[in-house]
Length: 171
Image 1 (cartoon, rainbow, N blue to C red):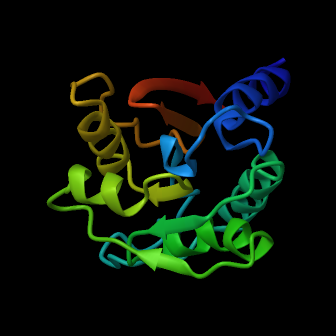
Image 2: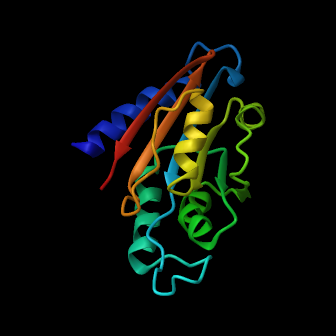
């Protein structure tokens, strides 16, 4: 059921990118997909830049499959092993390089200007993804993601200045 819901949501949010859409300028539609990194190796709590676990690698592959019907223009990741490893399968499928971003401070206005008219995947962390989404929405709508939750997908569409958002959980 969740997969059907995702297909429906993706179809709705992707309509602004359709070649047949009655949008005169590509920059009138932007779509952003935000995910937290997949499960990281917690065996050494002192190590601040762990890689993904085997389960995390599988989740990263699953994200790539879930998002397979979406043609991404850009893939953003923070400069950590776990986020880059989560972003990598989707970036490879779309034949694009991962763009590294700094999550603090979040410069939503600059980000929106630089990605206007694009379809973008953003991979971050339990605290930075909700903050980034909230900054784009210009409201405090989403809370920090629970530490055991690596399955949230936040989708923001901006079409002709109208902003809509969805949260889908794959836990």
